[in-house]
Image (tube, one colour):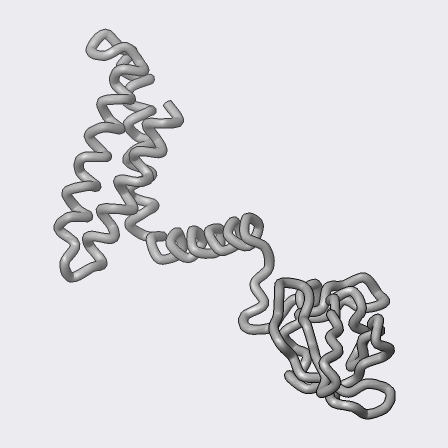
Length: 174
């Protein structure tokens, strides 16, 4: 019987969408089809034409109640369905940051969070204020070289704030 009531509810929503929409004939047709399926399912659940008439009348009355309540409460039902859909979406896909990066993405340093290596500038400086230029980025590491031909790799785990502790010493940037 639950399936029959769900079909009736979906049929009511489809019919009401058809009523509230300028081009809603498809919604009305789908609503009628779903209501017919719900009534047929109800008839088969209570025994067809040999069913107890009081029980059949009660169950058909539930369908009528669903449709009458939907007629008066359609806007509220749609609002509740939208809110429920949003809550389910947030539950499934997590909290949306709407353009803000999550804390797990921004920086990893001494506190164990990962740093996005592409945020390091193309030119960084060592303790002697010599320039190191970025050659390329490879995932969680970037390779820098200086004018003497030396090369150093900065890993995201080595970054803390605007410095990185590397094999060539501490590199910093502004």
